[in-house]
Length: 157
Image (cartoon, rainbow, N blue to C red):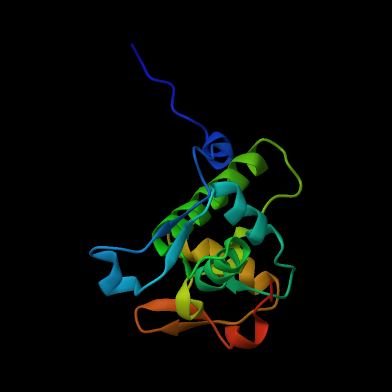
């Protein structure tokens, strides 16, 4: 018996019991400090990514801060926020392949430090090409690539 895999769009829309805010405790306090962490729903991450207009960029950290503020938490979970950005990117690409004209402009969401996300559809080169097509300069930063001067191009949620 074969198990039917969920599409990226199904994963994006499957919020399970999320979002939820939990107390930071145990081993997590060493990494994240005191307070609470919001574990967002995938669709919330997608909604924030969708707000970033052409000419602007955001980072996973900006999205985490916006989620924490929305839910009254100390921080947004870095792990699930990053995973859900990846799900959103793949769902957008999946929709595009099915003929959707407008989708989430996931290439405008960078990793911390303005770094390109090599795990997005098409890899780092694809994201670089999409960003350069919108007027951004992408430069080498160590072994990675980053948007030059990304701080001045950040979208404010």
